[in-house]
Length: 160
Image 1 (cartoon, rainbow, N blue to C red):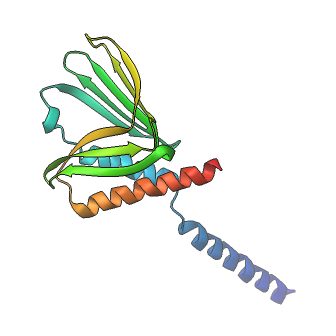
Image 2: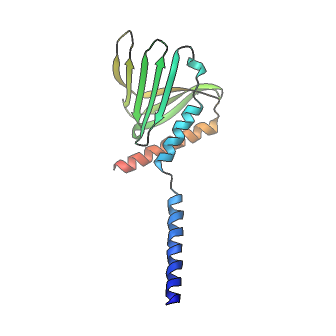
Image 3: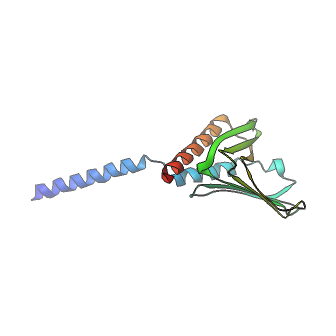
């Protein structure tokens, strides 16, 4: 009987260990979105628009939305949002010290809204979002592109 319980304990311990190894090898979408949000916030270029923008918000949610909001000193607000499952590609124009990151979608999938604008409030759709970045190198940009692709693939797989 003792031999049976010892074998049972070993088998149970082995299965728990094996389960831990299998689950630790997968990247959760929440980790990817957290990384993307922290990355964009860390390298955001405040200096590029310091005189015009009072504050900004970048939010990448666990449900797969990327939101970028700018509030200008005159009260005008610009809001951009898209679902990461519609992400197509990423382009960076500039140098390692300063540039613009273009996040492109498959079609007109970016929600563009303006509020408190003298020209009127606008609700439209676009194909990209532009985020100013600074002090970023090529390896970090490649890592960001890889994370966007991973989130996109996991969201597409979960929607099937």
